[in-house]
Image 1 (cartoon, rainbow, N blue to C red):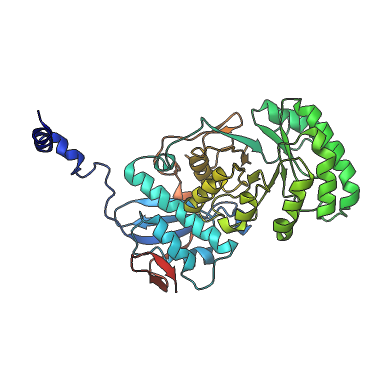
Image 2: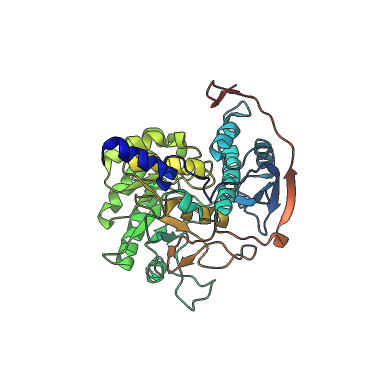
Length: 413
């Protein structure tokens, strides 16, 4: 058969479908966003950057997505950007939400924008019948290793029993967590905190914890931004021999961009920073210059899944890991979907101790110190709405003060 005859026969065969594909069975339905509702959960966390406010995004196709974060005011303003939009164009919605209100959003607004973005990804996963991690390329690890925010307790020990650092550290490792986490000295809130003097006490505590976790165990310490550069350096140098997994927030957030690069040159301990950061521009310089070993960016603070995956790409490019700050349970479930697809080092802060959450019959898949991705559609979260209190609703579009470039992409007005 000559080349001309072969090509003629090939194009007449069923294989022509390779060039003119039929409509895929998994096509997304036509849908518009009709309503955003805001709910207060039981025992609401009042800190905006740790908010567990629940938000739902409804569509005229019968699909509803769930997200978490923000405050009533910030959610209501950001929600106006969604009304009437195609829920599957989450990137375009995010970009408009970011620029639509003249001033660039601060961390409070980014938190609300992130909560809504979680709901949009939940909708898309439900529409296609797949978990969000499949939309992001599928899992790249068997599970996400965790560390416990306050450490674990030995089985059978009363919740109000006082335990030493060594006892908590051993119990945490025995519970299956990757690392034990501690703070810089247990001094009562409001008491005098002499950073110069406390360095010696903390160094001894770190030695005790290293003994407790053993030579192959891991531990980490959060400086809580309590130290200026000179004392942060003294403490980092003092604990180098005890080999911490990381030192978190060694200096004040306001000084991080100038102090952490200096600290990086003077100590060998791994450094992480950024639990108070919002968008990717906050930490980009430190990541690009390898001044941190991990970032602490989390959901929804960074602006949602749309932004977290861009941050993950930046981190992957520069061999920097991700250790997200703890957040609400729905956002934590979203983190597992995202970070299970990331190729770099991951360690999740987990503060639920495996306990159930009464208004979320399906949420986190956690066992023996590890968080697992699951096969449930979307974020894999089911909420009992009867246990939530609705406090807000948005059904009208907000401001649309944006310009479009000739190709339809957005630019600031």
